[in-house]
Length: 412
Image (cartoon, rainbow, N blue to C red; front, side, top):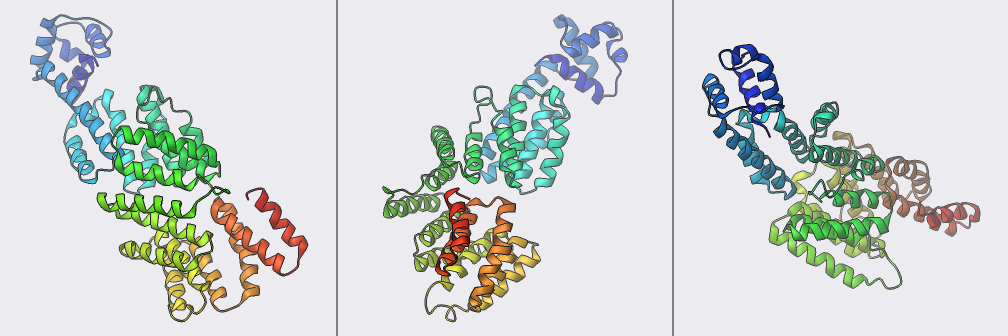
């Protein structure tokens, strides 16, 4: 970066015109060229400009270089998920007015939007990025890719996985050395049911996280890889459980409660898929215990739905676990946080708990499946399409059974 940008920054900070700064030193035209980095100038001019601005330009240049390294450290702390470091570096970054200099302010605002995403403030992050999109021409190559990375993350958080890939696949890995974006690509492909691609990109991300000693992200990438390995005739359920347990043990070492809860939830789902509702219920219960402080959230509700569903499929457990109260609690939380999807699931479970099987299957067909289709929840959709296929098979309704069989073959 040229000294010219620093000269312009401090000139404007002191509310001087180019003519006022150059008076007795050089022409307005020369000042303009210096600020744009379009001309050479002697050390004597640098010294005179420093005196007029009341600063040491050489020292300020060194400070700016240190500040740019500080921004990189802030970014690294966010990638590494180092919560205390993120806050410390944020404070250090923002107490320095250098972030207003043109050469670093774009990077600062991009990283600020990433910080908002970590805090769950999607609206504020999106607002900042919308402004950055209007200044694309000002961004250097790294910043351009960082913008695409963040836009991809936002689309993923909103459930728009195709849009996320449109941004993420534009990133050039040679120009943007933060290869964390491969992990986001893996998640997007996973949610779009491209298992082979999801598995491939999770492996690429895993290799990067291992090389950079990003142990927390190693757990995330291993989880996506594990989910997308798929089930076939060689699939070993005991080995799957063991691999999940190894990841859970790593979470205990790193004190990563939220990641442990996610793994336990996945393990519960695997047991449920295998038909072992008793084990699934046990894992869901452990997950709910870990999430107790965050009850007012979709994540808590999803696991409560899983737990109640499993209990309803275990003989003799309906009254023992007071499932009606759990369903009522889940419905109320769903209303309070305006989670329509979870509310529909609890209404479905209420019908099942009350033994209203006919209404239960109609509710799945008319409410749950359309809702899952609209939200792009392919994995859950597969489960309920399979439920309807088995129902119509048992009802000896070949036409309807064939309809859902075709959907299963098409992988929803």
